[in-house]
Length: 122
Image: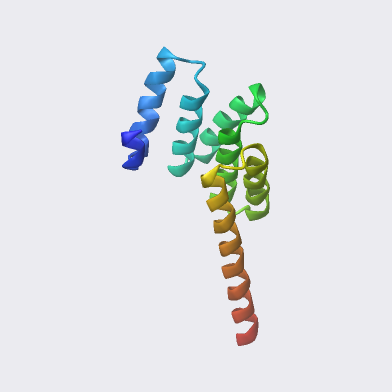
């Protein structure tokens, strides 16, 4: 957790890999690893990890959040919002998902504003 808080995500992925060698069934380690992969921009690996988790538990809030995060960073805002809202249905107290929904709305608002400014200039 200390490494994660310092945002040394590459090290966290390494540590989660080592931890999963010892406790291969630990879902929290898998989710933490997947989230760090997404934050590192390694979206396909993160999505694969999230999908593996969701195969065993289709309502795992952490894995759904990771999928939403990957979609958000790949600019698929509608799909990302859907995943974040699904996380909140499963876990209403998931603060990261709640903040992510706000981020999606803010980004969409900015994009609309930019589009309006471009159309006014023409």
